[in-house]
Length: 133
Image (cartoon, rainbow, N blue to C red):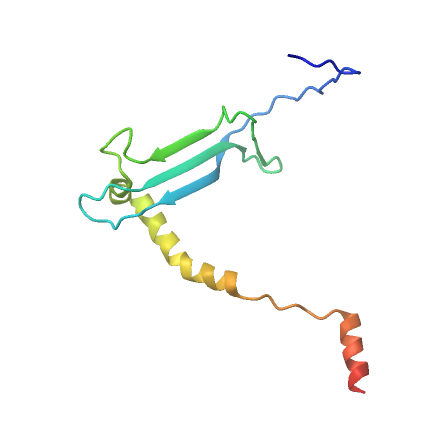
């Protein structure tokens, strides 16, 4: 049931735009098992959104209904021959990506846990000098 407005709403027209690439908006990797024969658990889910890579016009297009997004899913459900570890074993780029992610964990953890140094402002520095005198 519609509710009437006291005044009409006019939405401005949006000009047409071309997106020549895709942007990885979301990537989720779930690997609950070791890479061993017979292990077929795990998933890779990637969401790709339209992206304009034209220099000076870089832009990501996000639609409310996600109708234009592409989704890449490896989970073995729709095709038992396309499982997570089979993907890692068969696609060298995916294997390299997994190696890169694993090797990044320790440096990422260190970066997260490192407390940033806070530089003293001129006012704080002046106050410290005065108290020393």
